[in-house]
Image (tube, rainbow, N blue to C red; front, side, top):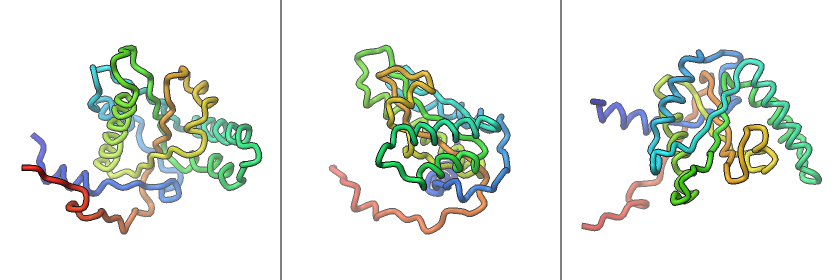
Length: 193
């Protein structure tokens, strides 16, 4: 049985670590990434449908992701194009050891509302966050860039009803995230006895 105090510490010390905070060029072993994704696959989900799919980019794959997403952004941005966004989409994947595309594949069970599949993938991402923390790594879930662009789905083999839910960056921490607080629990909790 897991020690509750250790879990409390793990959950309360989970932080987002942004690409600029990673140790440049230091690679996480692929077997650790496999363990992290295995933990993600144990997330709760309605009807045991497991609506997630993960695509992992590492090595030369990071450059493929960077080129693809920056060019898709450029193609779709039109008059809203921002050079800074384009540059970040080109550079940020290269700062990570691995980037995981977070996809939701709509389950075949039509009785399960889409929101429950989305929630299941979010639970899987929380398992990724906790796993990354347990391994002493940094992680960051981003939903920026091309995440919600319909045209991005094709790259991941997603159908119309599926969703690209963002990208999870993983790397070794060079600069820890500090100064994180939470509002008092009393502001967000109601007990009814």
